[in-house]
Length: 259
Image (cartoon, rainbow, N blue to C red; front, side):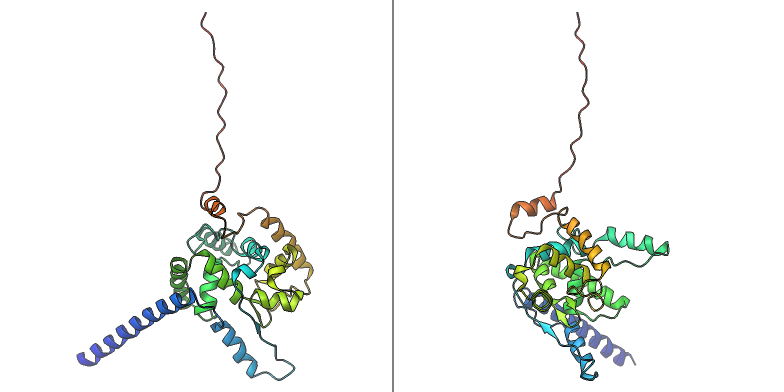
């Protein structure tokens, strides 16, 4: 019996070691290699096999380097999805606490996942919710933050996230919904795309609803207020990591002359 238990323990140890090494290999690989497909994309394509021709939705995806994606869209997704993207280490603990308190008050559940967490989930994991997946998501989030850095995370995020029904990535949605390359997206168009991200199957940036138009205005307002997303400008990076502090006003003191 002991021998059987030892064999099982060794097998589990070897399996965990293999999975750990494999995860490191994939993260290192994707630091330089374009992510042409993800588990989410594969899951979508498999789901189309069981549908008839009328129900099928075409799949669109094209990888583009970050320099070929409008900075308007980079600014818009940060304004909409993750205001503190340039500041946190992968997880926004304040947003999690706010979401928890709102849930306790019985309010509508709000997402607290950062862009880094969404990227980790989309590229390496499945979509179904579970504590196991959430734990792995946290592991991959810290891993890509350490290995990739913010610029690469943004590049992979904008190329892998679903931005429409069967539409994945900035270039695909720009071509399908606005008939232009992602590099030429305007601020209003970028804000509409960002407004669709909570549920891109329901919200269509090509045919925005009244709710989406309202969100567009809110996102555009935030785009002007948050730190500019500019990975080429070292000065702006320093400003992001060291937000300006308000100077304390010195109280004026009246001096009395001794006669």
